[in-house]
Amino acid sequence: MHVENSRDLIILEQIEQNPDATQASLAGEVGVAVGTINWHIKRLVNKGYIKVKRAERKKLKYIITPEGISLRARLTIDYIQNQFSLYRLTREKVSALLAQVQAEGHSGVRLIGDGDVADVCRLTCLEQSISILDDPKVPAIIVHGIKVYLQGVHGQG
Image (cartoon, rainbow, N blue to C red; front, side):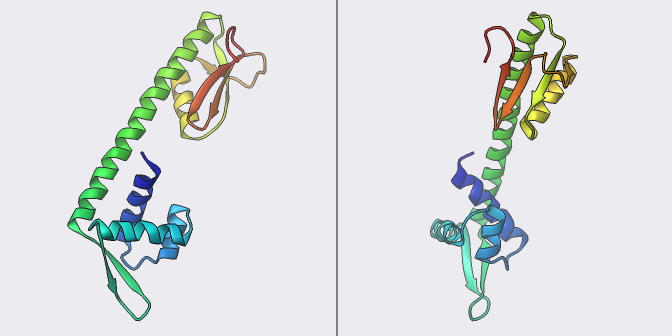
């Protein structure tokens, strides 16, 4: 999912959950500067996804329009589809790496890395009866962000 869409999704979800959200609180949720949130909100307002009402003298209230609710639904579906695609691609990649490990006579690997992608690697190893070991003599599956590669097998880094 494109970063802009991801931010829009978070902003729309946060406003839906808390219409009294401030730009500062939204910036904290998204992990960006308040100026970036201001830019996103102005863009969402211009596209008709959010309305802004003045609640008090300096306080604004954000309201998601029906078009904004529809956008949030589309972005949510895109996000889920992207996550499933990443899951499937990771499983395919790890399965291919494990086939190489097994072809060289190994029944275990080290798993270096953490996070969701490492969890998918761990699950794939379990399903293929490959032990995860803490042994520097066995090949290693390395997880770096969303990338997965093999180290310590002939022909690999």
